[in-house]
Image (cartoon, rainbow, N blue to C red):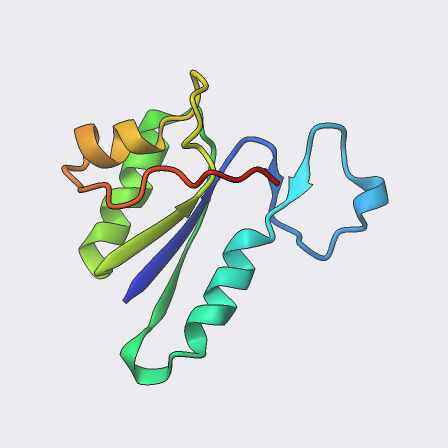
Length: 111
């Protein structure tokens, strides 16, 4: 089972939202639905689990979400929240709060 979690205060859940009408500073959560869709292509060897979205400034909520994911998933993929900013707390929560192991911390690319 592979869990997929999007993090970020800027995300809105409705990926079908007209981008011209988005509130300032908001973007649709497109990574999670795309990843979940791609994972379904692996059939019986990969069961995608939608872990939803969580704000990237709420350590407690993120900890609960990741812990719940760790209870049912073999792997968790997160998007967002791993830059160098003060509110990029994913690594802190995964390692320090949930006892997880970080396999890939950063990719050298920007949108």
